[in-house]
Image (tube, rainbow over all chains, first blue to last red; front, top):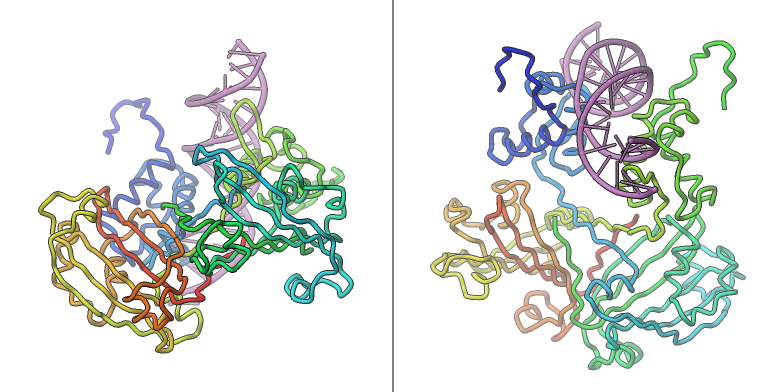
Length: 239
Length: 239
DNA sequence: GAGTGGTCTAGACCACAAG
DNA sequence: TTGTGGTCTAGACCACTCT
């Protein structure tokens, strides 16, 4: 909306400007759900910027699931926006320290064993595979925070045999050893069994959140871990 | 790696090419964690593409938390990659239908009440605020899938009074009415109380996952909902 | 066939932060 | 001050997909 008298310096239109204005129009029902938006060319003209700028803005909206884009069809306001909640799967130590609590780690058990059948099946390991079986605890201000039970595919990370995991947990070591892996994560609610009741210091059969994660590196299975949080633990995020 | 004899048509280098090659080098320890990467200009030269192309590739890696970028400092391979797990907080109906199960909705209770103190406090409502209190069930193949209890801030969406929610749940209506809201979500593990035991058809004190969500639209509180899943429900995702 | 988004380029200027 | 990423431009061609 700027009169074209003299060539005013005219601050350039940023892709954020475009993005925010489009969001505003959607929120204010100028473009209700399902609306077909103007083409990039038209928007560029309206906003007085390059098409690439509009493209960048719209691509971001598409990534967020706010609009749907199709070649030839154009850009449409999404009707059933897929809400995504992102949870940061951080190292336990960070979770604890974020709460300004003192972190402490304790190794409970470490043994090399032939991979049990269920593990071989789950990780698709050969029959004679060897595994490192680890149990450990994570404390926040000396109160039980998380119980961790883990199996590591030794063939995938042979160096693991030189680690004693007395000072730092296997997760942190694996992170430095096997960066940028792929993983499958699942959360469920379970009741504490005898072991969990003991280490988490709970009443028997207390509901707790358990997180299971299987990790691969370059298509090779590396580890399966089961992490059980203390009662009352709440995972939260916002969007 | 292309000899510069004749001006070969030479397929253009895409930002995906750059991105994937950078990922490969990080995975293969060519650039171990903490490494300072070459500048965009240098990479553009190496790959034989424009700097904008490199920028687009690196920006994606930064978004994924694989590298850290700072003006003047340059781009560095992230040491403690923050793993992000994205959960799609979809409409319950979609969750059910994804399992190829038949979805059924049932309204249990709907009443207009003065907002209880805890709700006013949580949503920052005025003292005389009115709320719509709703209880309903979601079934998958006629088996209890989720129990939902919700409070809606009537002032934020007055139209809600014209809805009877007999056929479709409040969530779907709110989604169409209040698109692109902000929300805070939390998950915890709880034991079923009398009501939940009844509606979810479980044993008393069964561990279940409960999701709480508070939603705002343009900084105005809209709704607070507590959704409790059937026993054994598992939230999962991969990255 | 034609329209729309997807991407690349070459160049430019800006903004932040390290020295 | 200076180096590095952040962004915008104007133009070009490509790729999907609808008709």
